[in-house]
Image 1 (cartoon, helix red, strand yellow):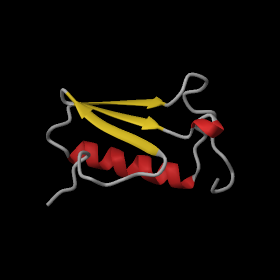
Image 2: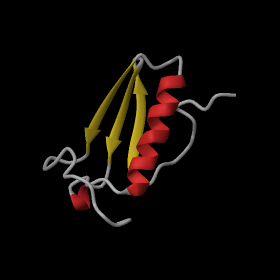
Image 3: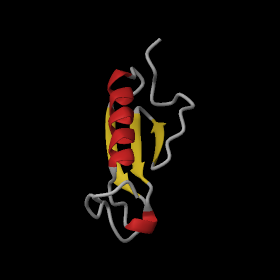
Image 4: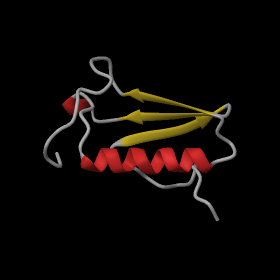
Length: 79
């Protein structure tokens, strides 16, 4: 069975939701202005793969949590 985006997989750094055939993926690291680290990049890759294989998804929106920053950049450590 192909894993879908709506499977009960819990991500540490991102939120995911499918509404009306649109996948909403949110980087949720507000404490560091949503800066990407290795774990977040891996989670995004997994979520994108799941969304691409999910017949219930027709579009994908990537966003950042909070009001200050979409994504501040990439951190050089695993923080």
